[in-house]
Length: 331
Image 1 (cartoon, helix red, strand yellow):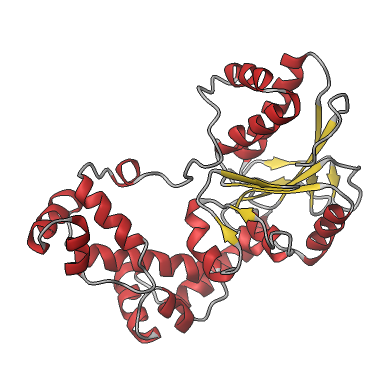
Image 2: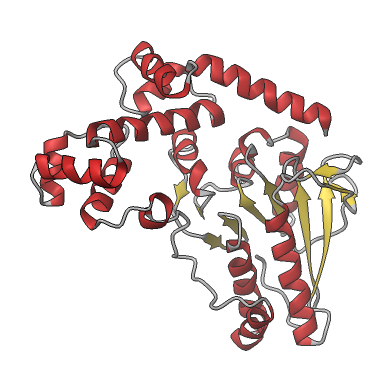
């Protein structure tokens, strides 16, 4: 965000891409509105922006009639790209040109959830830290290996900011309020939101293994983390057991007890889940996807993919693309 004179109203524009998450948008706007309420002055104003004059359908199916299109939007302090599950498909050439012009003119640019894809494709993240929703992290890294993607809830790097989405938008916006108007005001706004504490940017945006998978055993959690960090170049199960400090047989018993499958099967499923993300959210070839997920060939990936998901990678990619086109037609 661009720092501004404390007496000047900051104006935010929220670009509502098709399928945008309404929670993230309303969380940011409500936080700004409460800053005005608590501060008893017009510290912030905001508007919604769409790609065309039609209502923008949100992820939950509700439609929003935006205040402006990107072609007639007013001057802004910062613009925020708001995307849902298909942010990798929302980088429209005209919108990217508009974002580049805004940044060149001094406007701050940001993104929530998967809107980071749009900023990356527009070339606005080069040399800057960024983050994205945890589910998109692997395909984003494969697509943009030179970008500095972190696991943080949100990142602010000069005039460019990114947020992993959900309730983390509240923390990001409160951080902006604190920077511009002091931590006391930000804490009072947090109290209005019943938000216990303003989380730091360094907080991880992925649910930990205990919450996400119900894993209570520390040895299993450590083994799963090792697997998830070594998908492209899988390591052997004896090595994983050694790193965890257990025998392979003991680790096998723990996996069956806590996850209902062997370590070998679980590791394979991790790689297949990553493959599915790459198939759906990148333009990597099936062979490139196979290599990125530790499979020796596209046919070997296809065999296990079909067993796991009931379809081949190519069939899934076609079906996913068709579903996206049908959604656009209905919106």
